Length: 432
Ligand SMILES: Nc1ncnc2c1ncn2[C@@H]1O[C@H](COP(=O)(O)OP(=O)(O)O)[C@@H](O)[C@H]1O
Ligand SMILES: [Mg+2]
Image (tube, rainbow, N blue to C red; front, top):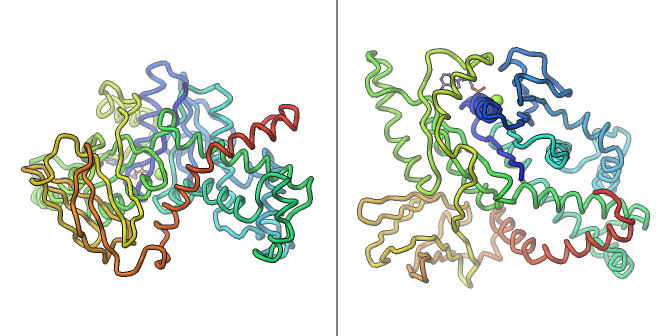
């Protein structure tokens, strides 16, 4: 089964360099690999000193690169879907005078980059697809697009014709949108199926994992922690962290030695956040990473460890559960005695200490003012109860919404699968 590895992190931390080094390592081992960039500020061409773009470019044996242009893909590869999306999203928003303007959700067209990645994956040409992403915020928006859209479609355009027939007059009244006619519904079903399948692919921990790149500096550490927390919340599997630009112990230069001291507490903090994820340190090189030879050098020097492309072992992750006055956070801590565990909350960080072991868990915004009211041990899970002053239902918060949607998604998964199967059967096995 092929693999997709997504690289994300703050701007300038080394995402493209590390994604490229992974791609070279993969190809050098004889695995057919595609390095693809979803960052509108593409730089794969610059990195390898070649003309890159919409067309696939071969860099070396087993290694191709591609810079995705979502607008172009939307118009040339998915004309039908983009028309449906235009109708759907544009139907109760902006006038259709400028076709590029009618989407309600900014960055919407980026969905087509993801659809293209899925298409490339399904083509079976590549055994590994390495994705070099835009900086954190944009990537998080990109990765939550399929779920956000599925949710939107299911809310406003109940998929399944019978439902449409029943709900149409109600929907008009309740949501103030008019439902599309039956032909359009077929196309909407098709889009819905594509979105569900896309989500399933990206959130399948046996296929797709995310690798975070960061450097030990205050702003980057904070952003990396948030990024990690949101990726977990959205159901993505983070399987490795790269701490880039690490200075050696004695640089022989006073200025650099001073920087080394500045890096130390941030390295420690990052390690306490990523106790469950392997962390790889990358030295700070005197030269920038540019050209195939430089990427090969990086791949040789820092990525030569066994299991670089192995799937991570299956681990339980933190789970948030809504309880009457707040939330219960459940953390897997096998074998630990909760009487010896100390838990301390500082605004949006939670420190868990057991003997010499310290773990820092970044918390979602909704828990900023929450108080810890109880600690419990249930099997191998440590449960922490957070009490909110307001009930979570009353507080409008994105992470609460996301969590709710996640639960809804889980509950609706089987139903959707059945609907998609039925839809395909109805279309005589039409390709999705
Ligand atoms: N370990 C390193 N040592 C020295 N320079 C580096 C290192 N990692 C990355 N760089 C350089 O830093 C700059 C930003 O790296 P890049 O991979 O483009 O980051 P991003 O894709 O996250 O914006 C580039 O000029 C790159 O060559
Ligand atoms: Mg980059």
